[in-house]
Image (tube, rainbow, N blue to C red):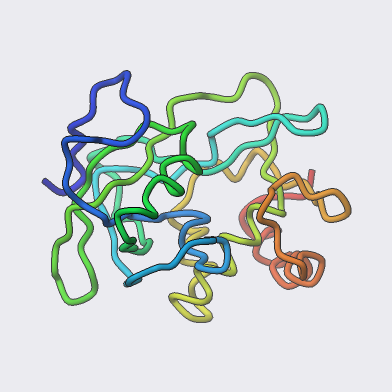
Length: 202
């Protein structure tokens, strides 16, 4: 069932008929620093059947930004991320955090070839008009990929992700992402060469 959704087009929120405490994270959930509950296990993995895209819109400070989302595409190459396992009582935290997404089921394959049935989050909305990627969000994602996949992690993420043409906003003084790290300014400087290779400063 790799990359196959069993949710209806209207599905949002927890999939009550699915018995799994595993989540596939492909964006900010890759960064364990951004998760405020205990993680029982975390392992690098990948899924197929989707593209990772900058497209999930949200508005802050009178400007429209985009976060990450999955978009179904059977021809897309695999997407790297992590399989996270949580205690049953902690899952509502994750469901609430990702409440704007449609919750779907995918098979995640780890580096040893083991397959886990996981829940992940597919975007439904599209931005209207101009939208930009906030560096406060992007830095969390890149830092997470660096933690998990090493020095090549940020480029791995960027090369597998679409939507960079929208540009990146340097919201360093007033971060719009609520889990922005305290060292955001230094991280933004650190990842600026990558941003300039894949996108542009807006």
